[in-house]
Length: 319
Image (cartoon, rainbow, N blue to C red; front, side, top):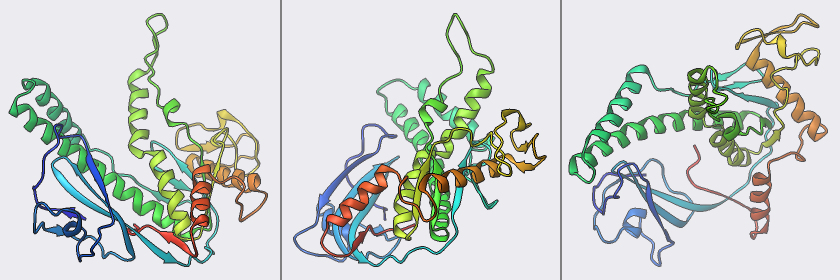
């Protein structure tokens, strides 16, 4: 839900997200904003979807001078097992999401024009005098540009992960260490790095994909749609031939092409890696469907739900 009114105190930093959560009200009203925002009476909101189930709490947040109301509800549901095929997922900077069956999902990236606008907005902020109103206005303009790009990326990620979780019984992903993968390539004064700008561009492209966010989305959406999420070690998945199983780092002749020197197989490099990820997931769980290698966060959430009385609960607002 998006709150269209400008009522309420603004955050001191235009780019910072401020939020507060409130418990279930003692008396029920038709609108969560009417229930939890009693001070500014008659606040208008845009309802993105109907609210089903019992409202547990409501979170009011603001980002880039825009206000949002998010209602968490509890709803008893029966989740049938997913009958779709198993799939492996390869996440990369060039092709964001590639499946083992050849499907590719894109994540919007900033265009050159949008990058120039962001750079100009950053420069404008630094030119303004600290503490001045003009600086706050410039920071707000910058925050709006950043928030718009983030919403677009998150929307694409939601659509992709929902499609994957709905149509596959087992989803296998890599346990990527994003922080280690995106370390700077500058090196030290004694041993300066090479191709630093290329490394920086690759890091930026990978961070725009947000692998951890995609994994988190899959963790709860797989539970919503009756599928299983399996997390595997990413070692050698991009260097192994999916046809004969030979590990050869030199077989990846380009970023997009993998040609096996043993069997002569010619594959798309990302699709080849996704197939290896699927095979590794199947072998690690001892067959399909497998639960032994699920992420700890997914298992923890299952245990929490098992402790509740009767049925399973789901949060309102599935994407």
